[in-house]
Image 1 (cartoon, helix red, strand yellow):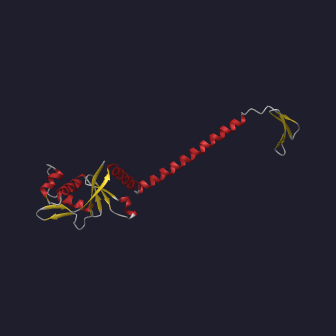
Image 2: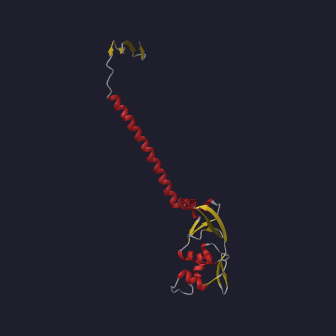
Image 3: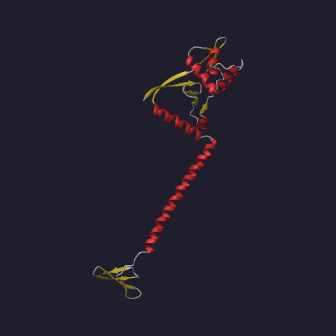
Length: 210
């Protein structure tokens, strides 16, 4: 089923407003391991309510009600949340979370409509998550170790199956019934009867003459 999927550009990050994941916009491979940032629940609620209100400026009371509900908070809770969220967004110039003095806050972003298949989106998200996990320093070591062990197990399995095959062949030779129509003539020659024909086998030349 196709749907219009909205991606928001927040400075150096892209954001799907239905998730808590920020994806860094970069072509630098060295930053790929840290390309995904996870918002805290309150950071997500803050960005979500500002996004839903855009392009309007949301006053402090409305923001507090949306993020904290009826829970009593200190006067510093909202400014602290704003500062932490700006740090997460790398919003040093305060151009993403914009403060309008005496009014409140608004979210400045670019919005992109992407028409994609929902299954494709889930595959992309899964691949992005896997890539970010594998490229972390600790996970890289484990991934390499698991790969090495898997290769070693496959090689040992192949060696074991090869040994079983040759063991079976040797047992077959050892228990084979000798051909009955063979009579010794001397040390170097044997008389071999094949059907009604008598043949002479020369051991020295390994030659059968009929």
